[in-house]
Length: 333
Ligand code: NAD
Picture (cartoon, rainbow, N blue to C red):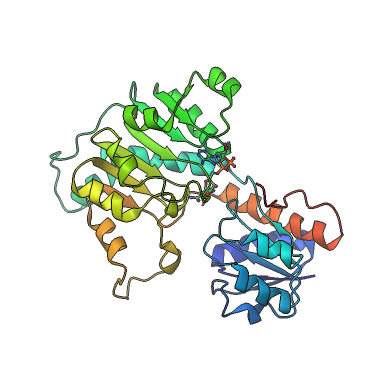
């Protein structure tokens, strides 16, 4: 069975080709992101394999169906970029990699917290330039501080365990709270209102849905503690970026660590260093010395890439062999 990969980077191709020696599928790698204008690249393939910044909206899925595509295989966990109703309408199942390494993302969220807190990125620039002053680098002890965790799924649970190791207090919010987990970790579920009001650090680990889109907006920011640190390794659209910028300018937000960005598809994963940046919002974010923007890299560990390739190829093989699709995304998920 033939699978066309969209949005492929060299490291994707390497990990998939290596593992495919045991799966024996026909893999074709395209660098461009899937969208409604390039569905023809899928011609002759039964499977398309996509990542976070590919677009599988209704129009694109219609085009894929016309090209004879029978399966959409996401090589990521989130599926907000796929119109599941349209896929169901054309009888195209959608599979994903529900968990490839919650450790990778959780550990990266901690990386952002510590880097922002202790300003390590600024310290490195300074010492390279012969500046050994500590002015402006003052941080705080993580121990004893309160962190608010929104969404307590697989990634957040690993993160909470790490943060409890620092001796932090954890306030959690989830639409499906797990009190047994809370008791085991010694954390407290609370309301969003209370989490915003009490937390020194707020970190986002819920999926992007109609309910969570722009949940961090001016009204939410107004309820937060002055100087709060905001971490987003979830999805860019969880935050209304214009409101975040306003909060940063007013010094209400003390710092922000963003591994994802609302309009990231035009920039992330590409080297655009020889172009003039035409996204004024991204340019403004990059201009703050208390903001770290990284290119959706929280997942990017050796272990995660191996697991992604393994699960994705197994999903494809199961489809080819008519086996149950254990990682199928259901519309009500
Ligand atoms: P998960 O499905 O295990 O957990 C998500 C949790 O969010 C669940 O407990 C769910 O009940 C909760 N939730 C759903 N709607 C909510 C709402 N409205 N308010 C509060 N909580 C809500 O998912 P996960 O594996 O922990 O991943 C979380 C998210 O992280 C993914 O959806 C994805 O968007 C993102 N992610 C980012 C990267 C990266 O590289 N930056 C990598 C993997 C995943």
